[in-house]
Length: 545
Image 1 (cartoon, helix red, strand yellow):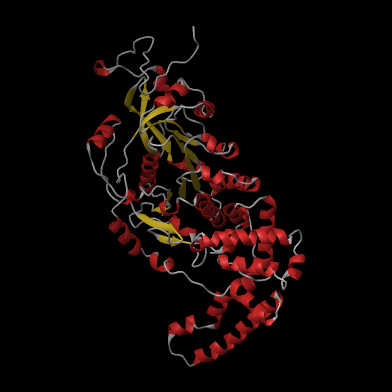
Image 2: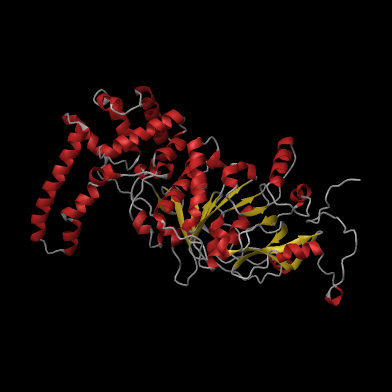
């Protein structure tokens, strides 16, 4: 006699050992186990509706599965095999967050999340799903902004300076080993202390080239632990990286991540959609860029503790790319960021195929789980399935059988209750998104991008004086300290000349733009502020907004 649990899940075909008692009108009452599960999701405060409980192969629409809104900053995981409905789950959650006034960030790897801005199209499948789960479905679009890394793709360009990106994240992009990563950190420290601001790739390449040249070898010897050979490896990696067309991602104007925290005039949260389909062949770059965005938000946001609603919920698609071949320092930084950013009011959801794609230290920080179907065609698949089952709380389901039998748009759910305790495991038939399930027409997307108030702020790249230009002064035989001193002296002299001109200038615009203070601030970030740069998680630069 087997002690294996029965599977009261989707399509299991398992029959209860005894008939369920009848409810009102002769309809079968919920079994005791189903009643206990449903009671675990009966929250008193605001919550997002995920779907209806599945029990013994039946969808029970009166047993609604929900997630408390205040618990969305406790992070989460959306996992499942390809084609099981993960993207639609993201869309469903993002819509309801926006409706509750919470801004959302979506990494759109496949290019099919732009539809969140347009009303959905009702059809027989949508009507059938809505009826099954007692959903009052209404076609609706949500306020959205569209972005693209470095302007590669259709969206407002998102750029970062090399200085703020930092050595740890850049080392992952360049695939440097631990020794080379530490050496790159020394190079950043040298540039910071010498006032050589690193805005774009050519700036960093110029600094490394200077340190490996005959002129700069004396400076190289003063940087502890940095060898000429290692600096040469870093220089070659940078040159190859730039040759692959990566220069567009770094530069100015640098994107202000506080743009992601906006709400629309009607109070709904703005959904920020970052298009990544144009850079799918560079997964290491875009996954690392996502961590820069997260680290930058972490630096800027104040501590708020537990809040009634999150300030922002961040969805990282293809999350396994963050962790592939990552150094221990990088993994430690991710773990710390995920653990600490909750108190800043930010939730992070990792989206991937199996929980084993996420390191255990990170997985342990994720309080909300939506697990779509898994496949078990190979021994490795079977092993992954067993590992996934072990990550769930005890339940009356046979999860191994259930997870391989779920249909598209069905998932196993467990979240944190309002008390912060895990809810019972619930097989769930998920609701249908109310926005368009697919990309919007390209012309409509182009119009949305160019009509945005942010487009004029970030569309045009700016190349101002920075490390590359200042190192050109080495042709005059000046060392780095002399170059910085000369630059500062020139700025002070220019300030006096422009002040004299300004007294005779009647244009208010020219008085401001041509003022010594404005130009000096714009040009001397590296020389005056660069020496005071501090770095924190991921080695990213801390900046004041």
